[in-house]
Length: 281
Image (tube, rainbow, N blue to C red):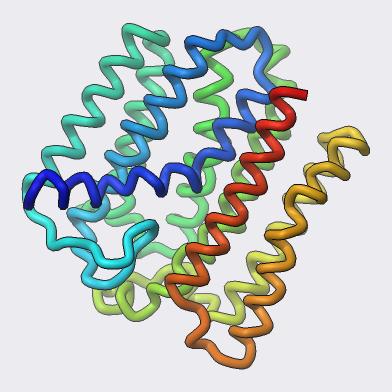
């Protein structure tokens, strides 16, 4: 593999899709330290998430489109070691720049993400378990990882429980949609993903139900004004989702890489925009 191939498999732009959890945590963080917040952003989005992408790419060896990469280059052992090196750097920086607890949580996240595709464990082949764990760790666990960098106060942490749960519910909604165009590729490897289990139309219905639960939780957590702004920000995503669902209902081939990436991009822009608005208002 060339350096360019390795960099492509790190899929740095894909980190944008996981960014809402960070911004949500930052918007709700007591005693925000801006330099520390910048370091946490870099550790998560430049090191940890890309390293996980590269590691999973090495074990999946996809020939078709994957999240954030339409034509993935062939992989070899260089990608495996590159992912570990970047992970190690992230933990080292976390230990000295943030604190040992943050470094420990980053280590745990990295190990769990590797278990997703590692051929000895391969959580990915267990549809319900992988859905639960991915949502839990990319959602609530990451949310608390960010929060704990700024406060260890028990009362503050108790107040963060509902937004952490919301973060996980949102990931539980999005996760099956990210698999909807990969049924054939996943089936080749013997992976029965949640989206395969649900079917293409069932994936849309499932996502709509779980998103509705997430927005009900948002309604409980936010003030009325903030909730209205949330709906305004996310209106384009809801319109696109409905439009795409109608297209897929008539023609299942529309459940493809291009439309999935458009939904991911739109949803991330809208959610990131709302959370950043919460930070600056």
